[in-house]
Length: 294
Image (cartoon, rainbow, N blue to C red; front, side):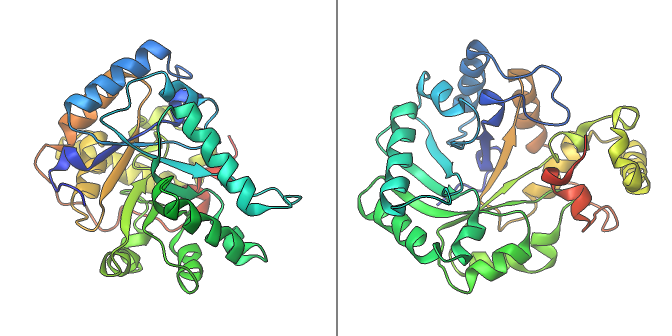
């Protein structure tokens, strides 16, 4: 389904288009002109996928003001309200509203932003609603966005997905180490990695890392010492780890400006480097941004 050329494996995350997103974001939400410039660079680098979500502020509407013809759009469905009386109607209405905001006829992919609902009483109805959207031609592929492999293991016992999005980074190798990446690939599931830079944490100088992360200072220090010893940029190291994971189909990266995207495109095409096994963690306090107390 996807090209193996490193820069072609990139997908553009668009949370920054609708929200001031990321621990390292100092500039806030990207302006309309900046979004236009970023998409132009993406187009020129043969980046073909944009990742967005209904919950990313006005990201979908901002994208809808741009020329999206070259891009495949993946969006995410928020949690179904507890008082929802007709899940089918709610899901279809959400997707049709997204399509209007984006000004496209269909989504390349639709993911559940809170897939744990599939394991609740509404789960089978919700899943059937996604299948109906495929049958109607409103979406090409359905899937889930998860926080960890253990969450995915439960879901795979009962449901089939076309796409799985999960956090994978130099620090977060759980999808690789648990065998989940290879399991999904054998099942024909497309894998989209996110949190390549842990919301920018992996790119920040040591001196600027927030106090919250002090419990993981030994790991952070070892990481920065290794970068200095090898004369590597953090960007090259992070992207080299991901580019070497052959089971990953798309590497989602978010940027605040056009310069950052150009730097990412350059870095991912540099020679691959050996990543020390010791530079990783399984601590959700570090790996799951929803738990960060900043």
